[in-house]
Amino acid sequence: MAKRGAGVGVEKIFGEGSFLTTTVDEVLKWGRKNSLYPMPFGTACCAIEFMSAVSSHYDLARFGAEVVRFSPRQADVLIVAGTISCKMAPVLKTIYEQMCEPKWVISMGVCASSGGFYDNYATVQGIDTLIPVDVYITGCPPRPEAVLGAIVELQKKIDREPHAPLF
Amino acid sequence: MNDTTTKNPSTADVALKVKELFASTVREGPGPVGDVCLWVEARSLSDVLRHLKDEHLFDVLMDETCVDYPDRPQRFEVIYNLYSLSTGNRIFLKVAADDQEPGLPSATHLYGSADWFEREIFDMFGVRFENHPDPRRILMYEGFEGHPLRKDYPATRRQPIIGPTDGPDHQARHG
Image (tube, rainbow over all chains, first blue to last red; front, side, top):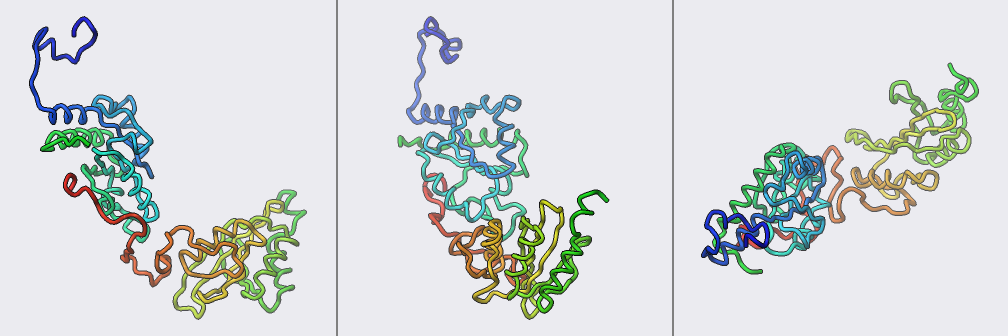
């Protein structure tokens, strides 16, 4: 392993020729939580803040989630960043259904989470009335640290899943 | 003042001429501070608009909007904001309206910009426009009931969302 390249770091701890035992579930969960491909569903200022979180200064890459995909078919995490109007609701629902399993949803900011101060006739009062949400982020807009925190929370949640079904 | 204003008639002169020509259906009324505002009766609206566009070079309909006054016999007030690129003049027209058919004459045959303005007024207030080429809602979705900017539309009223939105699925994993 050492001769062929970088390895994954464990050979330094356990020595050459050593091995680990684990379960398929644990390996899958380890892989999934450390390579989350986000898809931003950006409709407002939260999407601008997401760009900041994902760029080099805050560097979402440290948590394995830097490969932003703009196709739902290639993404694991739908990050809903912004106000969702009632007219946009069917679009969001369709995008979510186009994502492959396993998939997760982060509701970024108060507008996506509850409608925020858009308590009116035109705005969806929380995207959890449309699609299941795994992690909510507060803030208007949230700090980039809060977005990083949400990714870490999601990783913990993936780790807690009793089984990692093979979809 | 600069050269432009001396060569071109002022908005006040335009208002005088329009009032003279449409004496029975146009009167001057209160409007935005510093601008001229003419109240026009619906039956002569098309003629007044055409006259302003052809004779006084008001070539831009900058805005067309609406206000709801529930206590008035005709509760809606539709406001036209006309601007002339060549003379720099601006004039406002106000027309009383209700939500009955056939509604106000559409300004779309004179000003292309009136198309979406009038759709928005219909969507938000329910005022209808006769001979509009595409009299649909523009901001709210098809199936939305009522007109949300009316004073009597309850601020807390929520309507079901139309579309493939039948609640969260995958309850077993995401509950």
